Length: 477
View 1 (cartoon, helix red, strand yellow):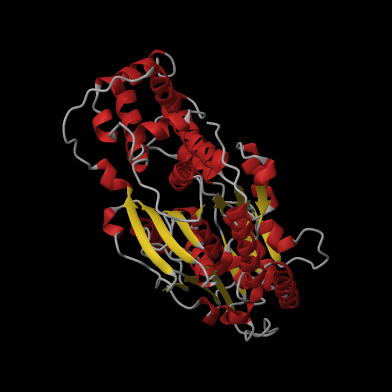
View 2 (tube, rainbow, N blue to C red; view 1 turned 90 degrees about the horizontal axis):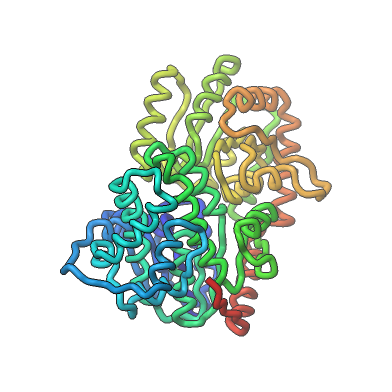
């Protein structure tokens, strides 16, 4: 089977998380051929892969948003929009439910409209003016025009991407990747699978509400815009996958058909961690670890502040931050400056390493993220028999506490952005190593029962077979 995996902002440019999941999926199915269709932020990422591509990856088709932003207009163009085309574009910038079929027909590779030329045309100006008479009537026209143009520029250009030949299209998020998946499904009438690790629309909503660069008048516009793209993907997906039940509930809340939604949890290779000994009941010091990418969504600043408070009571504590530091150099520098300003010692950034070699050295694993799906780092810590203190995001509570499975807690959940509570929890656990060991054993029991890589791969093999013989193409907006 030939499978096109569509990835946005992750594989193969960024290590960890979703990228590790993609690598595991491809490597675990050598009988299938994969095409990787990427959407990255910057052209400078081209060819800069963080992963060795498995032999069953036939091709990587790279696309970058900044190449659309910098594209030149070849020549002025005149477009006479049909009424349904004008309405579809107006709905795209003012609602969350545009007519995507019309937009696909307009801007796809075989369509009559060139994105950049259209966005410089009088026809586009007419659409913006109509929007300003209603939705943006309290906003300066100049501001509305450039905001709308910057919003549409990457999306309309992405719709020019031709569908690669495949038996199944599989996108690992909604957003731009999900929109491409919907486009390819329409063009080929082949099945589309969506796997959401976190709920993309919700994550974008949280970012937009906090973002200083988004004017208050346009926050709802941007939120609706991403909801609209999610709707396009959901409406054309044969199967919509989430990693845990609450995420499935959110997908349905955001418009996914409940009958096509299912839960497939992550899995890990337990053999990688089988030689790690249980937590020792006696050890000098307190060794804490965090397997993370150094990016804002992981909220390392809360972790650093919490560790500073831990050091006041446990000066023998150390914190190892294990993972790549080059994804967001600016945020990494901010973390280093925070450590310096707080005069915190005993923190080390380890970089990208074989994490299986590190878990055995730890007493406790931390996760301070403000958003997650089903973090592989937590599953790995559980497989390594290490207790975890994690924020109440994604499926972390389900992982640590279980769902009526009779196993017992594998750690403690704390609120997001609460360094005081996190530090108190760490200190309380550190006083009872017997409890910490028991939590580690509970975690190992839970991950062994529910989160095995072989079960994960078996389920996806079956899913690929199911959708390849039974497709339900959607004709709605």
